[in-house]
Length: 58
Image 1 (cartoon, helix red, strand yellow):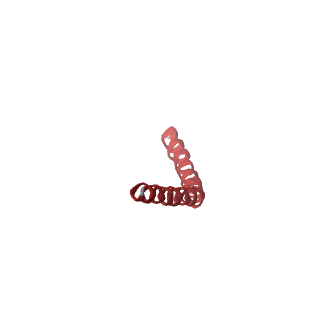
Image 2 (cartoon, rainbow, N blue to C red):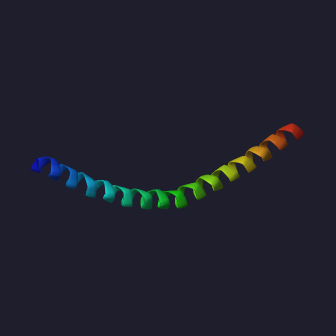
Image 3 (cartoon, rainbow, N blue to C red):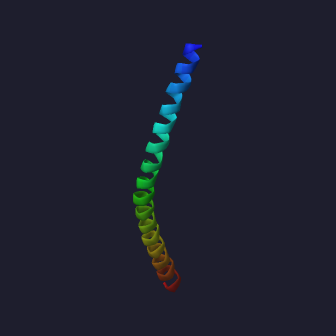
């Protein structure tokens, strides 16, 4: 009986800790990664459009 209580009490704090840590990490990643990806995609799309336009004109 004591083991079951210890396990439940131990698993609960761990879950809470991971829950508090993960959102922060995902929030930081969400702020950093999308901005880089969006800028990279935008530049790539612009370069692709320029290449397509130049190819069509040529």
